[in-house]
Length: 436
Image (cartoon, rainbow, N blue to C red; front, top):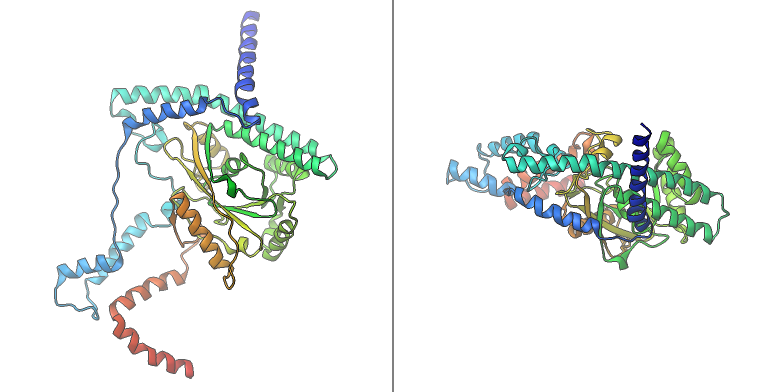
């Protein structure tokens, strides 16, 4: 029995020695031994055997309705109503119920190839004996080798974050405290990133957010914070929590001016704006990190930015984040998985591979309101990240469609049927109505 304990102790010593010497210490100083890069290259070669292409097609309202009219009759002119037009709306209605543009942004991204994870397809690993063997080996590697290593690194990183920030919090406010706080935050986030086997490629580092500014980014996952904070420190903004999350928040705010709001304050828009404006006014404060979408989107699109972040003033530093879905689905579907389940899925994925682009800083133009400024920043992020630029509000994840969106579709059809003649005929009536 004693021999077994001795062997177990030796194995634990070797385990922690390898982990500390080859993973933690290089991570704390932002170094890499190249093991992860080789691992990713091997994964790419293996995943190439499962490539399956997908095609999509579609058209505008006028094109698709023109097809319906062409099969119905050739004598219908542009300014007339055709009964066949109703079929267009029947078809679109059914498509919207099955797979509309909004709700599909809150489900996992559809892959062009199988990534050997059972949760992305429950049947592919039965196609051939070779795939079954590869899939089985992958399960062993992910759950028996990578998962224990990752969970250990995550626990160490979070523990060091709480202890380090608490100790730094006892120091007087000066440059030394700020430097130590940034160092502790960077070290902890880098250890946690290694706990996800994160491979991060940063582009255009000359445009990195500066102190006294506001960093805005598209939002896919809670680990967006870990990804961005690997390359620089940010002041976080969010609601105060209890439990373990509350312990972490209270320790972090002791060493760094993060902005945590109580639930009652979050409902007071003026209170939130005034506190953020005060933070930005101090040019020595870390840049604020904000996700204006207000919810997680599935790595394919950027949805409407809330204008509140763009009413504060100051310089906006846009950042585009794009995950590679082949190695793991980074999207957090909060309606389906709680935080613990989500993190377990991340730690049992192959890896987290992500590209981060720092865009040139942007400021509000003369005569531009906050909503227009938010849309301009959103479009820049979508274009750089290769994401769809959508006008829909992410809050539709939990709310009904607004009436104005329905009216917009009605106006489009009305203008198409009536034509220019119909619009011109309405102008005198509209003008007379205004005079009355």
